[in-house]
Amino acid sequence: MKPSPWSRCVVIAVVALWALAGSAAWAQGGCPARLRISFPDAPAEPFLQGRGDAFAAPPGLLVDWVRGALKRLGCDTQAELLRLPSRRVRAMLGSGELDLVAAVAQGGPMAALLTLPRPQGARGQFDLSLGQVEYALYAHRAGLAAQGGAPVLPPQARVGVTAGSSAERLAQERGWPVEPAPNHESVLQKLLAGRTPLLLMHSYYLDERLRRDAALARQVVRVGPPVERLRLHVGARPAFAEQHPAFMGRFWRELCRQSADAGGACRLPA
Image (cartoon, rainbow, N blue to C red; front, side):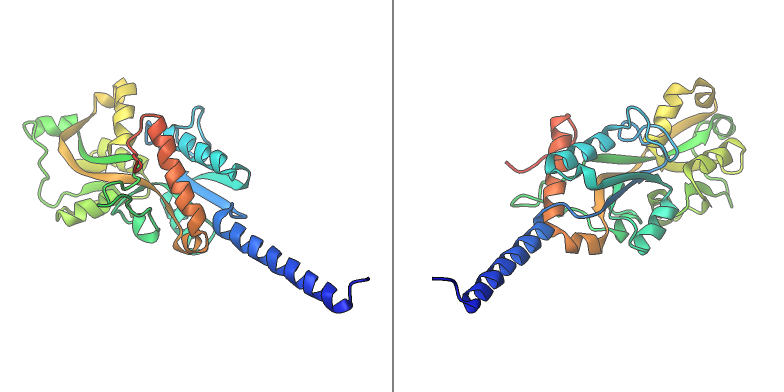
């Protein structure tokens, strides 16, 4: 007996429903069609090597972990990794051109624009952070000698910071007047030129340079204990995180696993 037109319509409808359900499930738990991920254009060794818009070889731990996580999830072919200055990152987040932002300090200005992973575990003791970002003061050695070796901020003087950075927020919270500059290198050049007596910056940028550059180390010195330690994350544009909650959950856990397997700071619940 040949199937009736009505039964054929029922079969087609059922198949269509299955297809729609599968498509919805894939959208929730599979790979997003687009994955644009930004990294800072300044070095933050060992997490990020080199400077500028090109990735160094090797690129740094954070790049390796992100690539490893995406590959384990089968989403590496969709991903586009970029190195961008922070101002452009903010603009592209606002226009929806970026999906994920790497090397975000928890509690910083950039983190306020993003969704970060929720703590895991019964007491929230596993925050899925990938490391700590340490912020410290640096001074010109000549200026320290004139002050007797103590990091004193002269009257009306300002602390050099990168505009819109966590360093700017930390300085303002402490009541320090600030001298913003568009990027880390500009802040450093102002210190070297004597335009600011101190600068506040994350140590990943400057400590490695001081170790490698003897001429710079003869001019610049780190002073005092760390001003603050903030946890490091990869954040998501909030709308992207809402559209792909299952993917983001899997990505953050796999990223943490990549860090843990490499001896990094991240730990997952047992």
